Length: 381
Image (tube, rainbow, N blue to C red; front, side, top):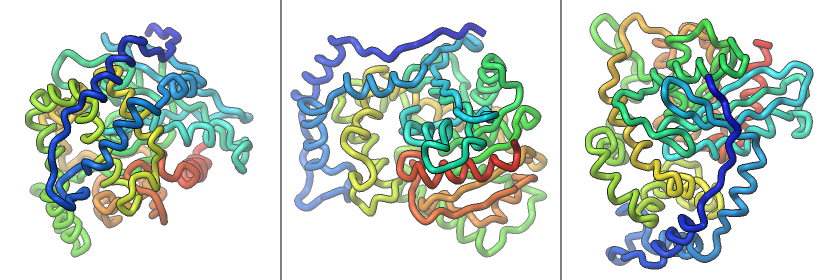
């Protein structure tokens, strides 16, 4: 595996083009008093995009991102971007942390210092990690796959190769959202490589012939999933069925891209309807600008299409055998009853419900998540 240093650097022409497109946005109308009821708020998006064009400083954010050591590794024909931050402690535990959608590796920026240097954040140096933060294939500074079939199962195999190449034959893993999907499949198919794993989203268990009857709590959770898909799942259905059609608009219009992403940051976070209670404009726009400059929104949503056609669906005998910790966020759809998880995790060591923080827990409540990870993995050192 070839590993080369990498530095984030946007072309001046791309930044100028972004500003011009933002200033020439052709805004849609909306009904009186729409707010966020119909989707992304027109008033908020105009305010955000005005700041993006004339107030946001990408070069400042770029410099902050480059404070980490970045690399690209060629694995199975794909160049995978990752940051590799060494721990400050007597025996750091290698840990790979994987983001989801519509995030980027930037989502992990607040937990990495707490994991690599816990003593500087009120913790114990003995809990330090060597943290690897990759960009999923088709996201950010990783290559955009040109072949079909890059699913979470495939990415799990890439992560094993990556960690081997970094000198970590066995390692710990954490993820949320799609990152949880990758981490779960590490536990399904590569448990021998894991010291232990931790996720903030559980696998959907096998519920077909031969599975035990659902409990009352599980039936309630299935009904909740159905309501959620009806009320919130339009984005997922489109991305699973016609991602290319969506890509033309999102790759061409920065305002459209911002609307598609920010609406999810508001809906899925523990923000009480005010997205800036959890994320500053600079934080929102750094994440969105990574998608824009790398032109990866289309390749990122394609992963939903690939998952729908995953040739390795969960079967009745599939179990996650790696020692597992699960932390449930305040996002209702990610709070199943414990017996739901026990259908698929054969070695469930930790089950925690946090008091604050939603879908983007690493970004919303980094202290809570870092404490969870340090406490859970301490028993495996």
